[in-house]
Length: 113
Image 1 (cartoon, helix red, strand yellow):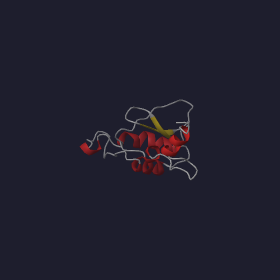
Image 2 (cartoon, rainbow, N blue to C red):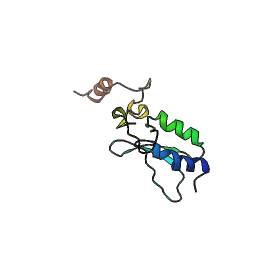
Image 3 (cartoon, rainbow, N blue to C red):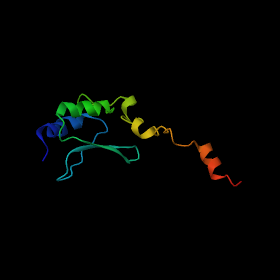
Image 4 (cartoon, rainbow, N blue to C red):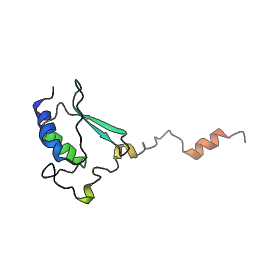
């Protein structure tokens, strides 16, 4: 069962957020699952130990638009919110000091040419 803080968020706050849906999975710990526009999973964030205020702050920081009422209209600029790049997924890791650049790697591969 959901802790009271998460349950309050689910029942009272989720209806106010655009593009935020609740899927109940019996027996599963509550978590926020972020999906790409193609419904590919990007990240899972456990919610069990968070307060209702912390969860609301999190989803707003992630870019979800909070409406005044569940059936309020959503401004055009927020229709696809929170669609935006997720920095942790788009930036490749920086090369380490011992890694080779592609040209060094190619030269090493073709010493016999």
